[in-house]
Image (cartoon, rainbow, N blue to C red; front, side):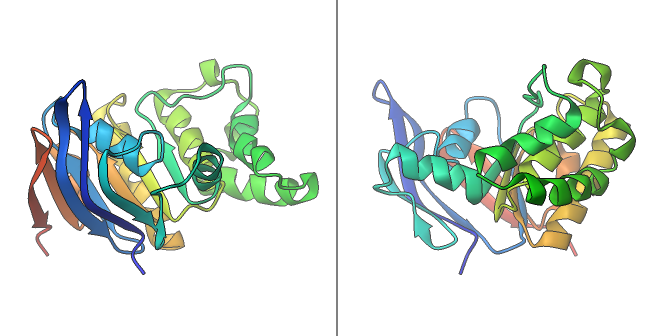
Length: 225
């Protein structure tokens, strides 16, 4: 069973094509970089895979489960249990501490307080933030905020993480550390990752690079061994 299967999806806005019969798949634990110029359709593709938007045609399946025909409640449950997103600008809740931001999706999932007390320290330690767990977002560096965002994404034990420019708001050295962390997490938990990026450096942790242009997937190249 593949972690992700995208089959001939199309999407238009005001009759302007944004995605044109895009097809590809990700194996369990596989990491792929999605590259292309602004306006090539990368963000729309990510939104369709994450269940935020719907393709006009074609089909998307996560862990063999088709998104086609799901209502909003079913898509919401999917986002809370199968797929997580890491954003360029972190999207942390400013009134919650680092630990509380990580715990938030566990509360939404209905996990008991006793279970959260066991899982939360493990998540914080995994991203190396035990010493900053009580800090507020405005007290954290960019790299620390991205670590919180990664731990929050990991909290639901997803099968797929969508990373939208995960190093785009970080300096180069911090970005390299974050890439190493994403790679380690993917390997340790068998999580597939699709990383949208403009940076060729991101491809070093990926097995494949998918290139989009004008809504078309124009190339799928394997990484050099």
